[in-house]
Image 1: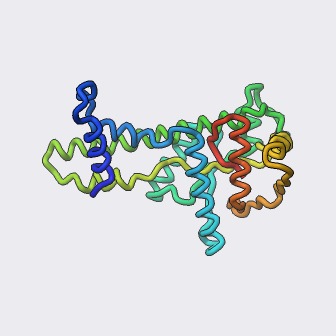
Image 2: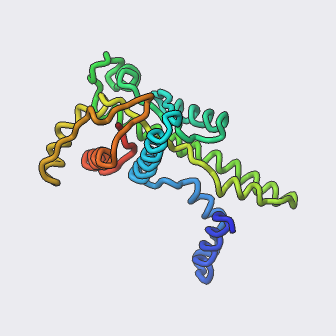
Image 3: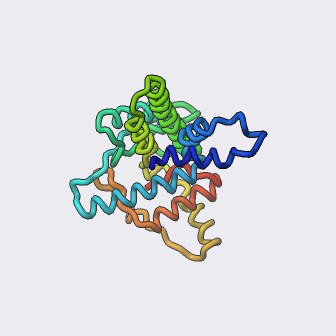
Length: 243
């Protein structure tokens, strides 16, 4: 049974018998849910962290299974990049977005172009990450809407809807990990480490252990958890796991 059709049945069972909800179309409700898969930045962080862990394991097993990251300085650029990658390769697997320190300083500082010396304001990178994921989620909504329109058209013409429903069930999101230049977060590490030490006890974070080879972040789960906690403490909402 299709996951899409199963979700519709679940909504139907919830709506049935409730007079105040009778105007709700169960299928439209499911469609809206699919178009808004990620509700918080933390969900994105958890999802992308799992991707990176898998990709690191794949690389350790076979170095030919490396990841590729494409630099972006705006949400629209990232959106078009990932839509292009997905259209060309039919998947976003092992494709990341990369944020370069000099690019952020030159193009995203509210104070205008700055030299590559970590002089940009501390919110420049988090704001850009939030913007990028907003655009990537929008790409999901648009592509899914095309599939929903295609499904409606097939039904109107009395065709076989199984192929379209299969596309919906196997839809791959445009949301991918973001690799941020280590310089983008190093300014926050001393303060954040001190805060975490107060909460969890003495701890040492070795940044050199986060080696990057072929834009392949090699870090363990502790490093991911630390960086997630870092963003949680600063913003109480996480939009990326950076390394």
